[in-house]
Image 1 (cartoon, protein in one colour):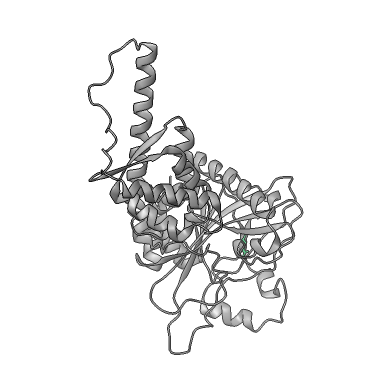
Image 2 (cartoon, rainbow, N blue to C red):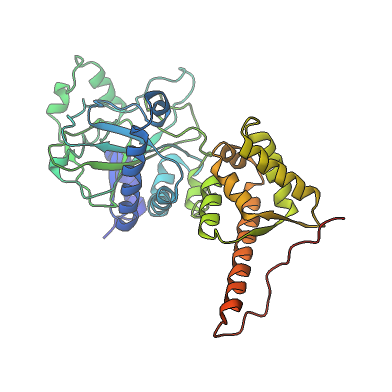
Length: 392
Ligand SMILES: O=C(O)CCC(=O)C(=O)O
């Protein structure tokens, strides 16, 4: 049976680590592993400059990588499951206002050597008169981890001040003698199990002597009080929204804000037959505004889209504008527009309006098609919205 939250946080406090068995569903972890493998392959195809910000620093980097993650659905799913399962224990350790400060996948491939023993943070780093905040990492196994795969190895109860002082007196070494004499533990996790770890605990990633990649989701939370402890790599993709534990626990992320261009492309792609779309003005006007600012002036297709949208808005009825579906399809293909849309405070409602408009246009197309082929059942009584009458 799963340990209750109070005993889990007490264990974390005492030993510097604790296990949260079954913190995420195996199916969600498998989906995330496939997503991470695919993302890693894509990023490794980029040139080195473009790769730079997408990886966190990692010790012993040969055959080992720390890939920062976006809030793709496969990621948020596991993030939310873990926040639900372990939120109470994490809250006891770092507080509800603690922010997510690492979101990445560590992949260690066959051939990766063991890392030097280390702690990610210590009792030093901040100004003397500022208390240092606390950082707790959660490693979630995205597949079963065997001893051969080089699991995380921890040295229980080495996170305290005294142990740190003792270790700081040791001659510099990848494996200080004082640790050799202490009990140690390999975190053998099943898919979806989590290892919660105080970032001051001494630990290391092991050597992968198996034939399989070991993938670990890393989530770290740092308390909002006190200075940020130095030493952690803070592997977090730039541009992610600030996410605190309370928000994650509330499940607010289970419907992540859609990625603008992907969502436009996907929906229009799925409904490519729609010839025209009736967009409410409240979506069309900001879309035009963002397209005017976000699309390159020297790009003829982009400028044709902007012109068409401008004309449509100019000719719009009271509340809606008729635009060709192809226009949305083209807009979706301009990746440059994505960041502008995403940064817009109106994107969420704009997206809902665009989705609804596309769905209505597609339903109308399907209705027309059925009429032509003689549907076996009568058409639905509520008809989709008609195009607005142009202003004369
Ligand atoms: O790979 C692991 O299990 C842990 C990695 C780690 O501790 C680190 O990179 O700092």
